[in-house]
Image 1 (tube, rainbow, N blue to C red):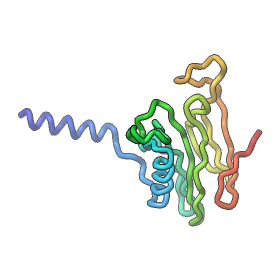
Image 2: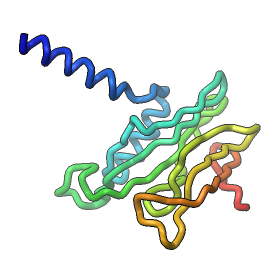
Image 3: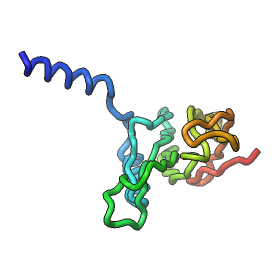
Image 4: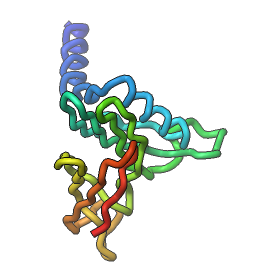
Length: 153
């Protein structure tokens, strides 16, 4: 009986958390390259994916970057995080751009409008604590020759 309860609770916990959103092997490689380069880890359940027959754009989160602290395991160096974006459009790789993170901009949604990626989220006011940005804002990025170029207001 104990084994059945243990198995059932394990099954329910795996099902409740779900899998990480699926992305192409090219996107997986771009994300891994970024995470390894700063010695952080991806929190893949926070991925946001926009995909159709010619476009795949992904917002992803890298946590706890250790940079040059070789004695520390990757991803174990604090509670800092970055939100970044990569993509593949018409077979062309769009390298990562950092679009937000702790103390900067908290991304909430992503959508494509023509040749522009629109990211909506929250920015920090001077009185906001690091957990809780409060100002609705957005960022726009044009798709240009394999790069995401931020469009300033």
